[in-house]
Length: 363
Ligand SMILES: *[C@@H]1O[C@H](CO)[C@@H](O)[C@H](O)[C@H]1NC(C)=O
Ligand SMILES: *[C@@H]1O[C@H](CO)[C@@H](O)[C@H](O)[C@H]1NC(C)=O
Ligand SMILES: *[C@@H]1O[C@H](CO)[C@@H](O)[C@H](O)[C@H]1NC(C)=O
Image (cartoon, rainbow, N blue to C red; front, top):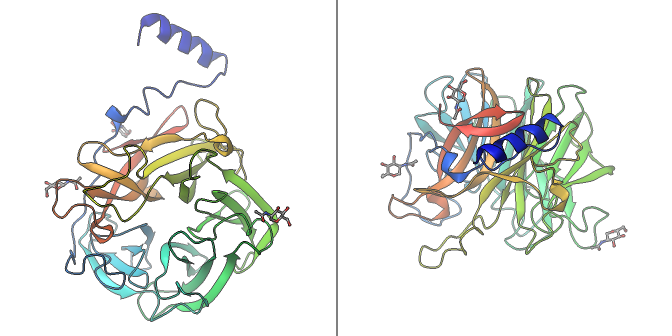
């Protein structure tokens, strides 16, 4: 950057204008992920029922268990459960324990035997797993709820659907896709929000009842929408930093799955992780150029680079050794075979903040 440009940027920052994102979000500054160790069940390529969990997760959700160990939950494998064998560490060894569901979800749907995109949180003394039931390319979908007090296989009660979308459902469930749930309980008000959505009208939010079982559709608000192309936003996650004083909306943009190494998506249309911030959990969220996420804004905070391809399905852990962490799945293009959904790897990086904007850092 030229000195003059730097001066101009400084001046515009001082005046409260948006800061330039060109440097902090440059792909050259994206770190490699921390890799993890553990079970590597690669013997069942592209099998929706077996071979999920351990180091291989898709759309990971991570939560601290009652025993001080982190547990991960994955798409497929009836919501595969894994546990890191070193207490308080994300690094591993990740051992596959089993699954949340014992069989098909009680949600009545042709996709009920293969739930996706779990989102697990502890509220009070109970763990809540919001899981998705759908079929690829369909908007006839449900977000189901299962609960447990231990996280262990066999301990979960399946309560079925709490939100269902279809072309004939009530607004906004007639224009949104009820998958990829992410619970966010506002630490300031304790109000529980369910953020969800995938393609169609992208990322929406509804308030939940305090027992987390009922959605209030009157509170529905759109949080993020890409008007271009196929409206390829999904997998949202909300975090809050008290130190920064902002709510952050993270989402995955692009093509998630079924990567075929001989015909990969056009460059830039594969998964990447994007983010915006707001002073309120209900938005509006903007990126550092001041562009509203509902009008296509959102920084690419992490995308394909070096050996990393198609990172996404992310979530945030707060207070990991006093820091915030972003975890996600990614393809390592140097391993073999490379791109199968059940060979996607769990990785993570620290979140640093630069003038209130989240930036990933290996250290
Ligand atoms: C969804 O429902 C609302 C309210 O009834 C209606 O105005 C809107 O046109 C519907 N959208 C679609 C895509 O059907
Ligand atoms: C990618 O795979 C190579 C070869 O197995 C390994 O050396 C490297 O650590 C891996 N990197 C990541 C980020 O997964
Ligand atoms: C992120 O913050 C940590 C802790 O303050 C620091 O050690 C690290 O260098 C920072 N990373 C970057 C890329 O600035």
